[in-house]
Length: 260
Image (cartoon, rainbow, N blue to C red; front, side, top):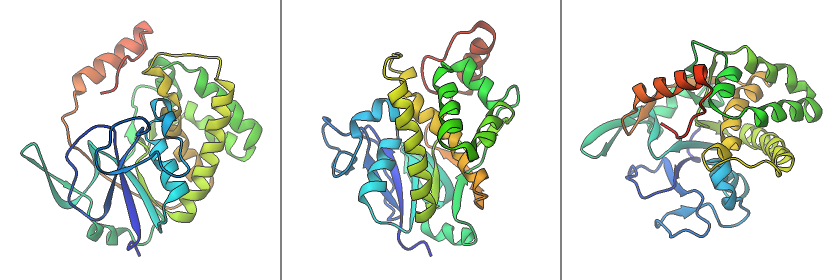
């Protein structure tokens, strides 16, 4: 079932990679950059130059236009799905997803990370407090105009307190192709509407961040069956800084300045 599965590893700098044929390391934002000796997202039909704002979506776009697969997935160089394969990085052993683990999920079309829960506020309010909310508001209006059947579900961002984040998934080809065409149409429309508005380097990455919020909108409207898998962080996460930055954003209006 999963024989022709490609799980991209989005990589933008030299980093350890698992020796496992499930994974396809992909240099994202490769246009104009030195090669890491792996597949790059700037060949064929691509949007590699948009990586500073579209993030890992440039890698997914490259795969959508140029690769053949029955299932397509994405993980990050420092974040994987949990599994049984031993991946040793900096002397530490992490167990990440292996093709043999996929057999446990034969009955579903999509594998997702476990939802991130926002206990204090809704997804919309969290975005509003930590980022500039104008692009998200414009996205909701685009959905209302172009995809009205999705608008009610999209508005639930103002009520929901959990989401499948990071643009991590493994999807059956037909579902991915339809989902990604829908997503790119929305984001390219947003790009046209936002062309006169400029943010700093960190906040200009809103296309990638908004896409994370739209994944559940698409899956819920189309009633797509999925299973959740835990996440393995290859690097330590500084939760103290994350909580401090969130509370500062919520109560002082100070937006995030970097990722964690």
